[in-house]
Each structure stands twice: as C-alpha cells, then as structure tokens.
Length: 195
Ligand code: IDP
Ligand code: MG
Image (cartoon, rainbow, N blue to C red; front, side, top):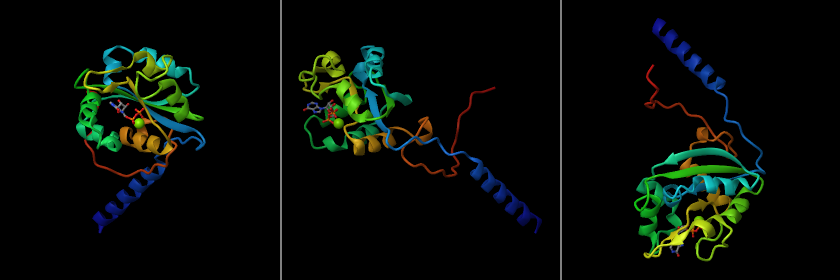
C-alpha cells in the first residue's frame, strides 16, 4: 500500500514538473523562417564572414546556428526532390563535404518575407548565370563534373522552408519557433562537462 502511495506521489510530481516546463517562445506567424546552409566549399574557402555580412544586409535575425557533419541520410532527405537528376550522386557527395571539408554551417533566419529576401541576396542556382553582385555570383563556380558549387543553400518557398528547418533543427535549438511544438518525456543519454 505504501509503495502504491509513493508511486502515485512520484507520478504527481512528474506531472507537476511537466506543467512547469515552459514552452519554447513562439513569434508571430506573419514572420517567416528560412534555412540557410553555408556549404562545404563556402567553409573551406573561408567565406563564412563574407556570406554572413551579405546576409546581414537584409533586416533579418539569426534564430539558430550550428556546424553539422552531414550524413548520407540527411543529405538524401534534404535533396529528395532531385533524386532522379544525373548529378544527384555528386551533389550528395558535395554537401557531405567529400570535395572540401566535412562541415556545413546551418542557420535559420527570421523576419518579414525572409524566404524571398534571402533568395535575392543568394542569387540564381547556376553560379555562371547568377547576378555577379549576389553571393553565388561572387563566390560560386561550376566544376568540371558539372556540379554547381554555389556556396550556399537557401529555402525556396514556405513549404520547403518548414520541411528543411524541421529536418535540420530541433525546436529547442531555435530561440524562437513559428511552428507549433510539443514536449515528450524521453530517457536519453546526455553528456555534461566534467566538474
Ligand atoms: P537551389 O539550391 O537554387 O534551390 P535546386 O534546384 O534546389 O536549386 O538544386 C539544389 C542544388 O543542386 C543546387 O544548389 C546546386 O548545388 C545543385 N544543382 C541544381 N541544379 C543543378 C544542375 O543542373 N547541375 C549541377 N548541379 C545542380
Ligand atoms: Mg532548392
């Protein structure tokens, strides 16, 4: 009987803790979020500073940022719409860093009209056709194998932005979320700095 009481109390305490957990801060839905990736060629060429400066000419704010070692699984999921293209395999190897460095800087920008604003600064997909004042026009190139090494990725539209942000980031990695979140109790292994 005692044990049962203790169990019930523990459960009640857990519930209390759950209620206490504050939700992630949300911002107004009119603001858009967009995913930007500084691709491995951008990192190996030390273009990060230049690219962030170009992007700061928009009035958007960064709400998430991290360095990612891209797995084949993540790469194929991210570029799933290009699965049938003949350059698909090269593209996957490119974003995984096989030609440059195995790192990508993933960022989420937020603000009014964020998706179009970033795409405008980033420029056209083919760096040879991109306006020379855009990031891709300035820093991109086409390889002999025909891959567009265009330095950055930027979400194309609302649907893609949502899909990509949810693919690359967990809600708690963003300081603001615009898509609804839910909390679940998990038993996961976590690492802490040794005291
Ligand atoms: P985007 O990056 O401008 O949105 P997507 O069509 O989504 O363009 O293509 C994703 C990436 O695949 C491009 O950024 C580029 O690196 C590569 N890519 C797209 N089209 C071609 C192509 O015709 N030849 C070689 N690479 C391409
Ligand atoms: Mg695209």
